[in-house]
Image (cartoon, rainbow, N blue to C red; front, side):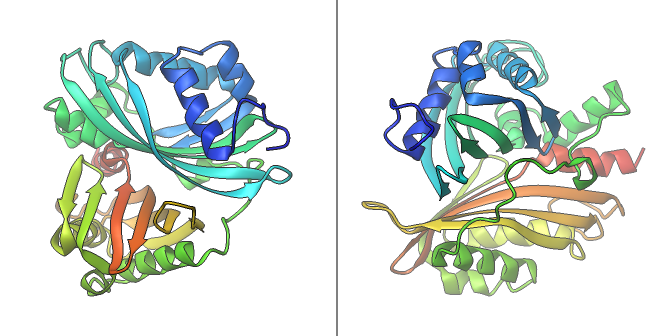
Length: 319
């Protein structure tokens, strides 16, 4: 961990501890400046942000709505080294109470549990590149709001409301594509085959007893749940181009082999599926998938995307 503070035992320890220090311990001043580069780039399905001050402001805004938010680090899948920098894919399960007004609407007092995955590039104790997906659709559903309706309301309030699309992106300091671990390659191959409409791969490669979690606060078991999510998504965008942007896997002591793939779909809403009747809208979907493997196949899968960003693109095309 050359270049990193001695308080951190290893890279996963760094990622988990700074998350707690910033969010739960309210380290929104010095801690954010310690750990986030002044020119950090943060890409989210809902938009792209530049600079530490913007990240600090966004963190404060979220805490205003969810002041008791607890961030539980479930896993950190990572690659790299201190000299070149390291990329983590950090899966977080948050518990919180919706106690403040904000972008999610007036406070409801509801208890929320949600997932997020953050891909962060860190070197010399600072994060300078980030890709972040929160399950905003799942959060809204727990508040009693439909993600489509929420996206429509945002467009009504601001007709120029835009989400993240590749034309807005800029090159950051991290230009890596992951590592050459076999489990990352396996997950990328499985996702690519699914996106090629080879849904028969699911009962062959997913453990019959698998646990799956998907955007929209969906949790299921076995092949049917996996088939329903992936078929519904792909059938909405049957001609879209699927791309794996970052692929890595790891084998660590006392843990199953696991992998993280950041991917996208780019194309036309030209099919019936999860997102209703085809509209012809041009849509960009940012996604991240985590998987764990066991003796009978893929035993756990978590795939996140932001439904609200997808709906915003579809609805904007409809005027």
